[in-house]
Length: 421
Image 1 (cartoon, rainbow, N blue to C red):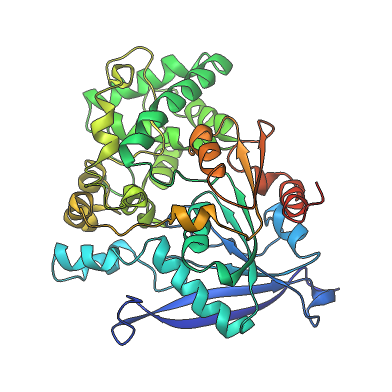
Image 2: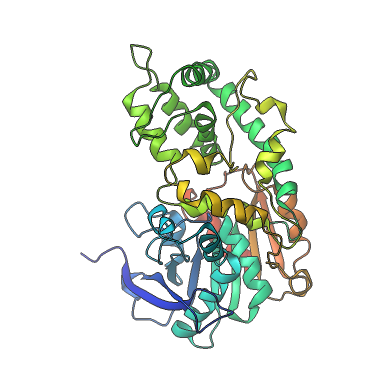
């Protein structure tokens, strides 16, 4: 019996700073995947750009996302571990602690944005494909990278597919979080409408945490504000159920928090596997328009319904706060460097609006109407500013639609880009 996938592992050496090619280098890992029945054929390449930031590419398995099987019908797929993730010289709490100073660490982390990822991809493309362009599939943050790619090296692209990831070309971090809090509020209220018992249960848990010093298995104190970060899951298709069943088992018969609950909270809120998600989150919006300045924390004051004594108590979402880097073990080595990144004022631009307006590379994007993470209004405004772009707006799926749709999302995007739909 043939295996489900034919795979080849690749490792590439690239400059840490592409502007200084003779300087320090890092390793980039990528896994080539093909249908075993077609592995010997000359197939077009599809580069997968993972969401995040800070997430590694999926590993081929029986539980692989549905888009992969769809892509392998016609393409050879490259699953890229973006720099700092997975097997690509990973950035971890342990590696961060080795830096001589916060300034040195912040300088290192500044090389982990979309512009550097695109430069890595171009080096890899030329090694694997020569002069031939390839196609890309960008999920969430992968869509942000796609627009940087189209801005910097469109000659390397034949077609692009974006799922839930069209960013604002000039949107600041303040613009983003002013729109994010209301969407998260509405999502939490929808959770409470579906599961009315969750609101009083969450309040009871928060009151326990405020009254007692309750520790997670790794020694971190579980506080009410860390508890609220569980709302990050609510933007996915199974997010309501994941949060609900977590809360359902939170309290034991003795009225104390269960070991199961504490273990799961440690995993869900610890950033052990993907610290770059927290560290680099706001730098996605840094483009020389002033410091991001912990925008999510500053915006919180504009939404009193998110106060810790508000009724009902609201969960938070894809927001990063300074306290996280002091209270979460996996983020503490980054604390001072994260402050420096938040204060930085000279981030280079990631998008070229003029070049994007003249774009001729077919770009097909799905915009999820109710997306909690990426504002649909901003995405549609961006789509109108990019040439050769076709957009599909739907509320059939949440932010993970490409992974859970059994290949339907990718198939339709390919048809849109090719003019077949």
